[in-house]
Image (spheres, rainbow, N blue to C red):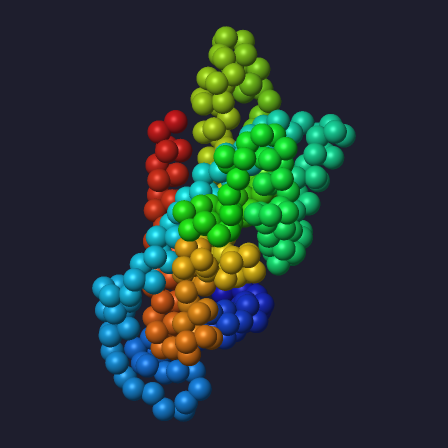
Length: 291
């Protein structure tokens, strides 16, 4: 035990940072969620679980934000995973052309989210935007929309931007997973007469399950915590149509000065993310065992 005693000191800096920057703020938020603190006054009242009761039972904006968050997350997880896997399958070989396309698809990831937001605000502009002008030139005026002004499609318009910006990032994870699969397994499948779909279903996908687990968890967290992209593009509008939980939390704290209420939403936010991530890991692990 003595020879490991010195190694313990290497854990101390990381442990201190974890305590200071995660445990302490989490406990503080939990305590503040039981008060009506406005973020400015030194005085506040203890309200117990009233913030949680009102938020879950009576606050229509919170309910809409949660619904928007679910729509946004499902859209991003489904399409970002599908596109990234498709591109990974097409670009898995290390040829010069494939490496060029990988870099091209990865490029939006390194652009700041606010810059991406302004690019797509211009693209979505109903009058001079590239998208509507292209539809007009193709004679498809019926498909023209106010992409960020229509309450029915605004959340999906922003979700598409997230998919566009981060598909290349997730593609890299899938490519790493594909390249780790032994080539001999594909040779055996070809000798046995397996079709491409059978090879993918019986060989590629089961061995790609660890990468898929990482992608699903990361994409869910990424989309549930989306903030700067939505804030820059719509600020939650129109009429709360694009307001998700992170935007709701920000508005309650820094615009309405309800820090106690915002802390309660932060606690619920954390519990929702933890529950979804746990269920994802359980489902994906179960699927991996059945293969």
